Length: 482
Image (cartoon, rainbow, N blue to C red; front, side, top):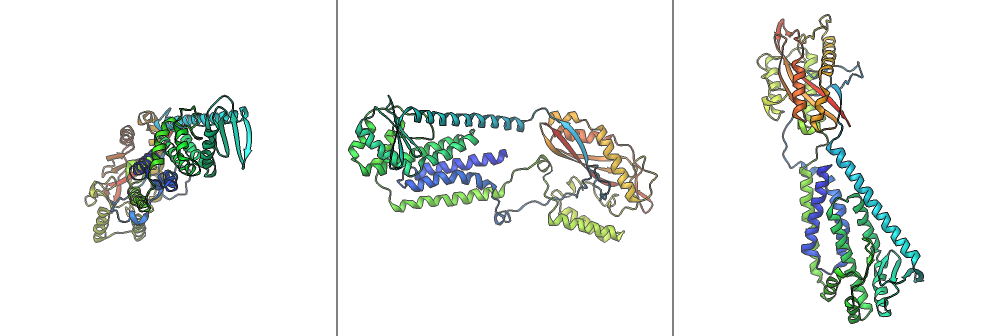
């Protein structure tokens, strides 16, 4: 989510820079209005688009993940498969974390922003009740006592009674343009964004640029219906007070008066200048390419393990191959060599991979074809491999669940479902060796290794009457509750 927010801010910044460089000084007010309304929406949508055609042109590494059996202790009917042991579920606690803290801050900010918006709406209603209301051509005109303010909100004009008749004429022309073009909807659109994305300063910049553009639009249309000289004089006559409400159209805004006069004096932009809007197309293309190349990690497991989904065609083919070997019951020397070549080609680091780091040609036998699997103490009375596998999985799960120190979660700063992967080998003597672990934090990684080191000596596996080493992978699901 944080990565998504960063992309939104970056895209909005790029759109604003493009607007200031090429479009801000043009008199294509309608086009500029569409630009300011559409680009904020695009900044929310583009990071979510992952165009497959672009992704397919980007080379990606090859990874392999042995399919895990997710028993979770809830089903005894699930078959134990390969060298992947039953997943161990551990419940930990985490009093506070950065994600929940940021979420709480965002909620507080939304609440404050919403409260300010409601206060502004109440302020407008109070002004309406304090003045005299008249209707003219479907427009409400509220005359406010003892003030010279002037602004509009949707189909209502607010005009101070201290204004002269000439000023009132210019204001009526100007504010009527705001009402007819529904400018209040534009400002309300950005006001909603300010409530939701109160932390994003670019939303405020967008709203200010829209307010300025609306004044340019209203001035340009109003000046053709009145005397340009008197219109200028009304703008320059004095500094009038205004209501400080971000989503109303104020006629007298001292900070904008100079810019409005400059824009009124500016010659109308030539039609050829509209070609500048085409600059938006390569910018969007670059954004789409960027979003296709990057993706946010959806959970700590994917970040820590950097593996692809087990639904990939390569992994499915490997799973099918394992089933064929298991049905066959034996494997030739040539088949062993071919299988090792497949494993090397489908791992990112070859023999350095977590699950295949040890050399298979020395003493390890593929788990699917081993005649007798290693036996956990207390499971020796069982005969079949299936019974031994299930018993060993259950015993190791109980051992890890009992020995794992849940307090290490306080050092991790993580929350939710955290996946830890541990690989180890039961050698010819039955000892647990070559323990390796991958976890989202060093403390969880060290704790997982420590727990596996406390496993008792096993009865080693056998192949054709000889003791052999067998590799295992143990997924540990660590649930850190807030």
